[in-house]
Length: 182
Image (cartoon, rainbow, N blue to C red; front, side):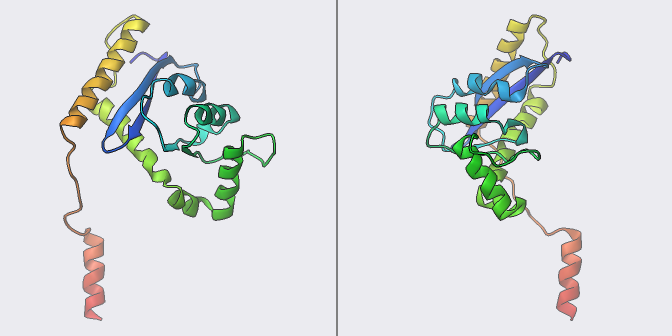
């Protein structure tokens, strides 16, 4: 993938983690500037939205609230954010609960870990489809990326592997043996 291009992908989690929207942008476009373009591609209702601190702006909250008014918007506040009545109401609720509960309890209570499913989708894209785009023209690169998302969604629909822990780690096994001796 050329240095001046970056991918923006949002996935939707229902029964399977499918990529619902994707936008290819130039590197000088900030993540929060493409939220509107990503939201217009969703065809199903959304109940839960998670994003990282980069998306903590009033414009993002307004856009997400306009497209998905019933959705729970979970975005941790930036470090330099302060409480102010001029902020979007959902952003202020997130800000207050974040500092009232603390980081760990807030993440657990708001199911912030669901964001990892989107991150995993991007990793699957890179591993299966690849990290480089082969087309030279920007429009063709957009189509190439969308085809890659379609292929990945088809793989997902065919079936995701079921993974689970089979055995305890070596340290836990030794600790349990130590506890049973005592």
